[in-house]
Length: 441
Ligand SMILES: NC(=O)c1ccc[n+]([C@@H]2O[C@H](COP(=O)([O-])OP(=O)(O)OC[C@H]3O[C@@H](n4cnc5c(N)ncnc54)[C@H](O)[C@@H]3O)[C@@H](O)[C@H]2O)c1
Ligand SMILES: O=c1ccn([C@@H]2O[C@H](COP(=O)(O)OP(=O)(O)O[C@H]3O[C@H](CO)[C@@H](O)[C@H](O)[C@H]3O)[C@@H](O)[C@H]2O)c(=O)[nH]1
Image 1 (tube, rainbow, N blue to C red):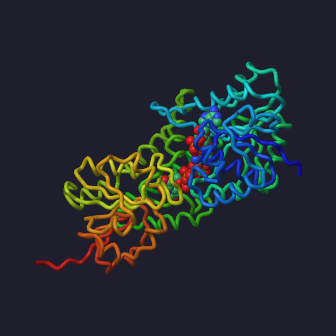
Image 2 (image 1 turned 180 degrees about the vertical axis):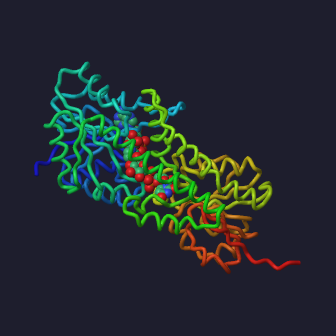
Image 3 (image 1 turned 30 degrees about the horizontal axis):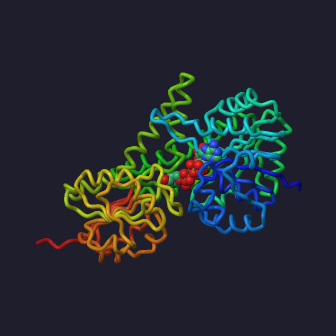
């Protein structure tokens, strides 16, 4: 194995995890970020993001001298065999992908490239973006280089695990040499490689995310039908998933998908289609279903209480999924805003993402120190993120801490049988409602 000198541009969820993982398999990695605070923190051995297993691995490779951090593109790119682009491609107001960070990295590379390197795009970029990167750099430097599309499929909350255990590594290239360099770099991971052209690689990323989002919105529509027809979506999903052509994964009904990827990537793909005069009807419906789904707990609570004015709601979980501090496009943000607008008092708790939530939630929202103090005296609870801390609570504990008591579970964390006799009304997604048997007076 020939270990390479690698620069990674951007130290977010993808860049830092990629940099750390590449150093762990033996390469010499320099991570460069424009955020001085992030770089300072990483140099002190503190990961700027919460991701299970990342901190220890980062410290280990930093101390071993295989991993370094800088704010200087010049330093990072000098003699690099490969330059990985892992900057953000957020959503613009019109739904298209905002490529200004990609454009700035292209400028950085054109300015500081001193010898041949393979430029690898990990960021999720619209089809044709790698062609743009190539043309821009070619125009502004005489140094030779190749461009490779190498989309990333890791999930937040399990990013380190996913990087070492991915299903495939997609390498899109029009240069067999450059494609081989990236395959060699990744060889120690032992993950199957799929090679294709650059545009197909770019499309694989969007198509994969759009397909997974479609699976989620599909099962959520089935969940709504189950509620109306007296079926149980959990059993329905299990029964469907046993068909290998369907597969059991990503069929968990709930309050929709959030996060830094599905919402923006589905919108971007609708726009990418629009640019070539194709209306992506199916994906538009997926997005519309998700919009309704993210507000579902609110509808259920309004139906239960009549009005939410003056009610105290304990919000359990603010992160878009467990094991992350990421709040991008989290359903909790919508729910907190809408609950406050409806006149409710919100007390939120999240084991990890509370600092991020404080910056995003309306000022009227209070934050509790732990799950029990969030629940104590509240009229109802909204279970928004399926953290283990919440799932470990027994139904009776909710019932004894809540005033009314009623639990609106957006993630189907509890078994319906276990809820019967817990002394609490229990609403979940796509499953029958469990009601407390109250004495008639
Ligand atoms: N977050 C995920 O789970 C995930 C998974 C797969 C793919 N992706 C894609 O990967 C890309 C990165 O996502 P992320 O969530 O890691 O982003 P992020 O916003 O967490 O991090 C991006 C980092 O890039 C830095 N940056 C911006 N411009 C720079 C420049 N010119 N030079 C150096 N650093 C610069 C920023 O300061 C920031 O630290 C996106 O395209 C995203 O769609 C993300
Ligand atoms: O059956 C399911 C599975 C997920 N979700 C929700 O879908 C969202 C996304 O979850 P997940 O895919 O686990 O997390 P991400 O970190 O957003 O990862 C997705 O987005 C990344 C960024 O592009 C990709 O790299 C990953 O492959 C892709 O799974 C979350 O809100 C989940 O609650 C459901 O509602 N039901």
